[in-house]
Image 1 (cartoon, rainbow, N blue to C red):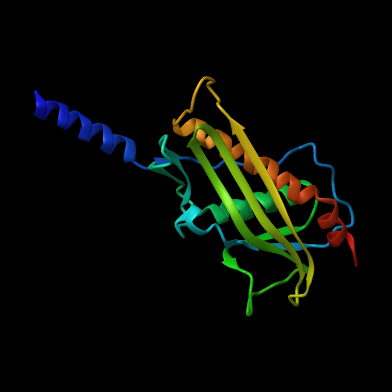
Image 2: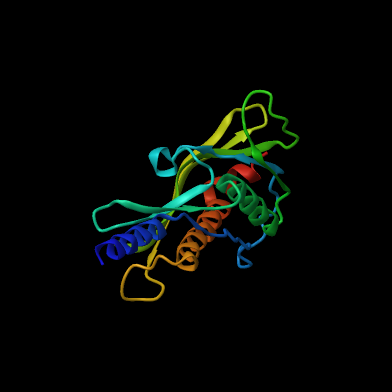
Length: 206
């Protein structure tokens, strides 16, 4: 009997520790008005500045935690989160009638090929979805608009949070709930970036 109990406990622990895989999905917000007169821009990959939150792993985007803060499982994606960020920003700019192109697998730096007057990149400080007391997601990053020659025109931090229990009444660890929180935060974060008045002013300046 004791052996059966121990075996059952081990199975539970192993099941709880399994990584959870989610899909990141983004669609541009159709309500964003066209940004007339904007210069073409290239969006480069953001630097991963998440520290211990991301385990220095571009495929990790969160975790499920126990009552004592102990991590039960990681939340993973099949495509590096940075690629999703770049592609979402490009799609959002294009939806606003901005001539935008992306370099999702390339960080901006010396030797980078730039064919547009402007560059957008930055440092991603948070990009995660969690089940920890509540279901939540947090995206924040320092966004930079630069000239093609590297001169910084603007640098500002933009942040977005999503905190909810999709089913109500307790923390949910289903992959659909974890994905819903992060996708909601991503959609609003991207919208904040492409509609930010300071960023728009730099795009429009000649």
